[in-house]
Length: 452
Image (cartoon, rainbow, N blue to C red; front, side, top):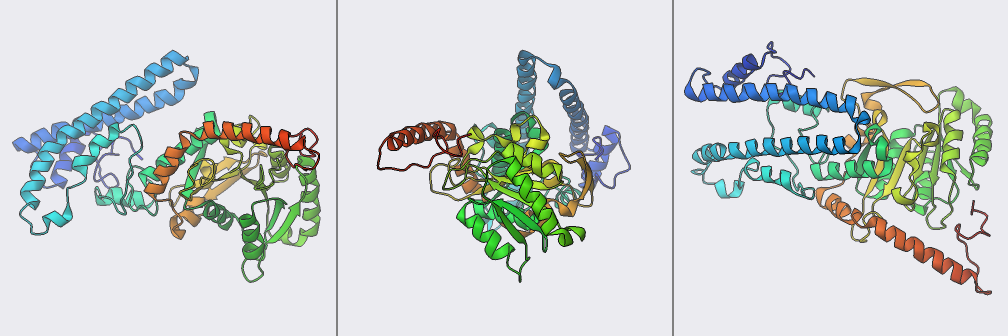
């Protein structure tokens, strides 16, 4: 999108690019005479906004190009300077509220059903920018700016403009962004997340997106019971997708590599007509606690051209940071979490998330993107083969604002809780293991076959 026309209500059809010309066109679009006292002031303000937007994009580019070379003190200075700009822009919005409110009151307060309509939200939402916690955006619908912005929003080309909370909700997006930061760390800019209404909804959403008729899944034996049922009883059902579900009892990359090669022979006919193998892992496993070598298994899958999925619910990003490996071959393609467990922590809500590469999660409607897979192969993904458009946008398993906020609140203490539970687990395992009449299965004990 052209940055000079990005703010225009006629961004898709305007013939202008200069700030003042765009501002005059904007005034006329809303029926304002640019030469009137009101129009002159409006045009001057709009001209300043168009110029400010161009400079904002310049600042964005400078940040992207120069951030990696800055020391910590300069990074803090850059952050604080841009943070205060955000406050200044918010104050301009706040100053704009008074004349807007007066105009709105002159239009609406004589209407008999004014009380049932309530306050016009823009007047009261600006101050939420200063909230120290994400705001609970408890709404189904949103105010629409103008037809051309809404057209872009429906096509996924205007990220600011939410159109319906079943698709995107600011509170849920805040949680998704935070989760990506926790899981991917310094590589967070490479990944995107979509939140679902439960952990199983997240698993089903991802598998529904990836699996086609008669594809093959190689899964670790000790996955969560609900995941087992979903694979065997739904995806594997001949009248559904007739997916071939195969299992591995081991924990290492070598064991998975052997099984992948066996499956390549066993299902050669399927693979010859374009069917695919997907590797599905859970580590640590629920409830057995077995830990898999996700890095080496991912490498085995990627070297053969297959995608790898990991349910990392039990480990959490603290104990099991699978996306922070330096070698991209050792990182799974998708990570799933049930927020319901350790991340939310309270046991009062259900929620889940899928994290994946930007290119596989979302592409604006009508576009495609070419990227390099972990094994070096280039692949092109059209917009309708991304998780958002293929599943998330149409199936309605979204996470609402209240539940997203509850998870965000719980995540503030999850690291302390996980550390304490880890200490408790090790302590109890060692105490019970010392008792001659108690058999203990715990990967943290040296005599466990899963210890390494």
